[in-house]
Length: 133
Image (tube, rainbow, N blue to C red):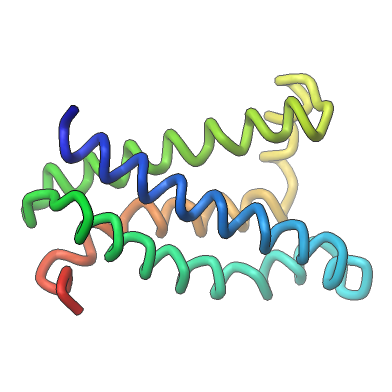
């Protein structure tokens, strides 16, 4: 299997696991007091910091050439996998239909999270030159 694919899937898996835990905590402990948008805004920097770390760990375990094209491809694989895992979770545990899941992308909290996921997808590119850091 391609290092780009393996590293991207590992990166997505690590980030999804952390997001699952933090998302549950956000919904139970923070959102009831702040509302969903502020809760996502509080969680997002923590998730991005973890994603930066998960990206480094993924690149250490499965190195990807420090060139823009393979790093962007790794980020794209990770983003597609992450969005797929989130959709699967939404459809199974959340009990939503595909249309209901897609409708969530019209809400401010989910759009804010999506913006964070785009940043997450760019981390492999941003890590060029800092893989050992």
